Amino acid sequence: MWIKNIGMALIGLSAGGAIAGAFVAFIASLGVYTRLDGWAKSGRKLLQTETLILLGTTVGNLITLYQIPVPVGQVGLAVCGLFFGIFTGCLAAALADVVKLFPILSRRTGLRNGLPYVIAAVGIGKAVGTWLQFFCFSRPQ
Image (cartoon, one colour):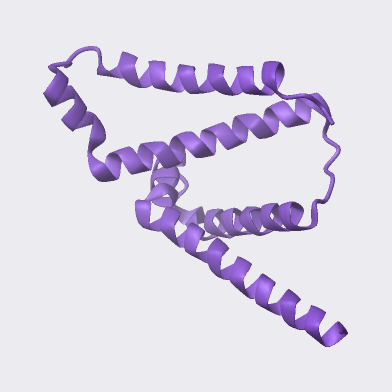
């Protein structure tokens, strides 16, 4: 019986590692890492940045997999939410850049001067929706 459990654990960890690796590779292929590096102007520390991103992905997977409680309180949860939102925004910006969404959108709608406001409105709408979801519609267990 324990051999079956060890086999299942090895298969599960291998599959999870493959999925996590594919996700990190997907984000890297979008250019999120190099874009973040360009914004932060930390060209010499790119290897350290990538290592920290991989470490964060691994720790996040372990916390999710083993359901490890992380007692950070409301403030810590808000800070985590901020970082998750920044990550989601960077990923969305990289995806939009890859498919050239905003130039196509501005050309088809004839919107030239107000495009930054549209982008800001999308970000603010996402933030307000997340805030409502967190504070109004979720109940503590």
